[in-house]
Length: 323
Ligand code: SER
Image (tube, rainbow, N blue to C red; front, side):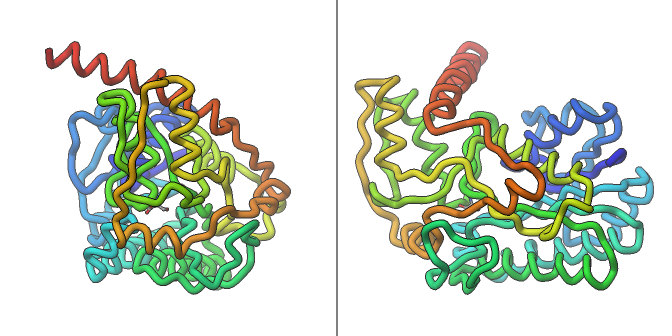
């Protein structure tokens, strides 16, 4: 992993992973690729950023060859709620994008990281302690693209020996970049609302239990999986990982410990509720623990404290600059 391309580099995971990779690799060895140039994103300011559509395979190939890329972190994707609104576009971006990445990787001997999701499971999957290898019959377009993506990655590894690895991420929580278009976005929005208005109206029911993770753990997971010696890996791709399994009610209670006046109310969005209800409540991530030493750093209470501290700083900075 010496010369890395990150697709989706201005997105939720990409903007933080790009910076983390730049800190651990040489400065100019990480190329950030995003659909559009976003001047306010740190990841695109630091060094080479290239704006192109991941469906454009010719440009992807040129970038990989020009910068002699050896590893592609392929994060460009539409999330679950927006994919339900625009299913044809979601298939096109998520599947054509991944197919292009795998083809260019095959022809240029690159390793690939592909993020799958709790969305790759469906209502027939065991909801508690969801095994690594189990029923996957997702009922959302996002899930269809994620389970198809997992299978396509397996295919390229088996038939073409492409070193493709991946994780099934839970909902991700970050103070740096907002998600946008996901079902688990409530777990980010709630912090902004808690700090700005001390109240939040949640679009999922109070007892909707889902796996979640703080972004530093998500970023470390991707980097440490890609750095693991392949002889330790049985699965390679689509590892279940989690850090906490929580409901909106539990998250609100933890925020209330820091902001006693905080209040949560509920106005359920039936589309996102149906998506959440089709996903597991808690994944079994023991394969990730045994095969490559997965271990999250942030519990619910540590995550909430850090989120509130860092987001308060960020928001006061914005007020200061704009005010
Ligand atoms: N966070 C994603 C979503 O809600 C799930 O992987 O779409």
